[in-house]
Image (cartoon, rainbow, N blue to C red; front, side, top):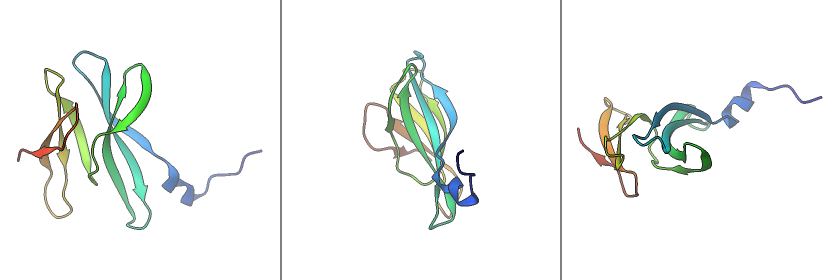
Length: 104
């Protein structure tokens, strides 16, 4: 018999959200929601994985990265990043690697 889950066990869950499929259907970018126990908040980062599986790759290291959307050519992903003290801003990330650039 397995142990019952306790409320503290929720901090250990990582929940994928908001999947976005690349234009060619080969890749998926999604938001991974985890919990920061010390700060008592959710952390959302962008991850990429092949549509048929494989090892996921972390794309961003922000605290609140949401709503990924692929560019038509599949070379970039736009997303929203919410700073701690202001409204969400649009960022653009090259999928091949590199740092995201703030657009707004």
